[in-house]
Image (cartoon, rainbow, N blue to C red; front, side, top):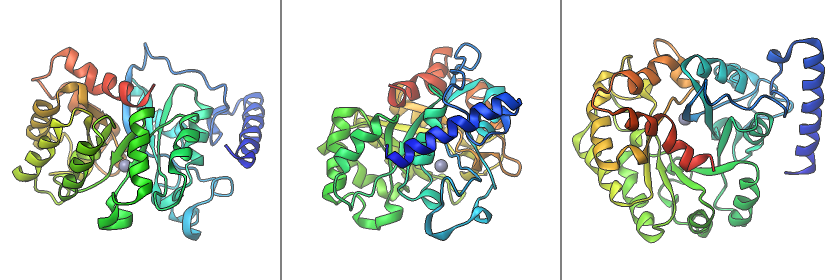
Length: 319
Ligand SMILES: [Zn+2]
C-alpha cells in the first residue's frame, strides 16, 4: 500500500473512533479496522460476487472525471451490503472491482477489506498492458486480493494475448489467485486455451458466462460452458439472476441451466453469488437470489448446498 493509502487508513481509523464515541458507527462510510470479525455461526454463507462503492468521492475518486451523480445507486458501502447480507445469513462477501467507477485502482476494495477483517476477499483488476503484473499481484495478495477480474470488454480480441496477461496466469498458478472472467459464451474458447496452457491456474467464470443475458438460454452456449469443466481448475459462479433469462424472481427458468452446470462441474467447483447492488433493483432482491439456491433446487443434498453457499468460495477466495 502507498503512503497515501496508509494515511487514508489512519484518517479512516480516526473517523471510526470519533464515530464510535459519538455512537454513530453505522453511519461511517467504512467501518474502522476493529470492526467485529464476522460471526460465522450466525452468518455462515458467502456471497462470491458483489460490488461496493462510496459516495465519498473525494477520498476514493472515480475514473474519467465521473462524479457522485454518476453512481447508481448513489451509495453502496460495505455496511449497506452487509445490511442486505446478514438477514439471509451471509457473513462474508467477495468484493469485485468495478472498472467503470474505479478503473485499475483497487484501493477502495482493499480499504474495505482492511476495515472488516475476515469479512471480505477482493477480486481486483490489473492493466495487463502495463509492466509488473507479477509484482503487483504479490503486493495485492497481502491486501486480501485473491483473484483478478479479466474481461474482453476492455482490450477486445487481444484480451488474453499480452505478456502481462500470460504472467498473471503463470503467477496465479503459484499464489492461488484466481483469474475471474467476465465474458460472453463466444469468449470461452480463449479461456479454454489458457486453461490448457496453465492447468494449475484457478479460473472462475462469472454469471454462467452471461448465458441468457439477451433473454434466451441457448443449449449450445450451455454446452460450451459445461465443456470447460474438463479443466480441473475451472469454476463457475451461478449468479446475476436479475440479468439472465426471464430476469424475474423466483428465477425458476434458470434451474435447468444450474442443473447442467452442477452435473458438469460438481458443487465443489460451483458457487452462488448475488452481484449486488444490481441484484437489488426493481423486483429483484438479495433474498430472492439466495432463496433460489437455498430453497428451490430440490435435487441438491444438504452437503451440495454447503459447497454452493460457502465451501467453494471459501476454498477459492478466502485463503
Ligand atoms: Zn458484477
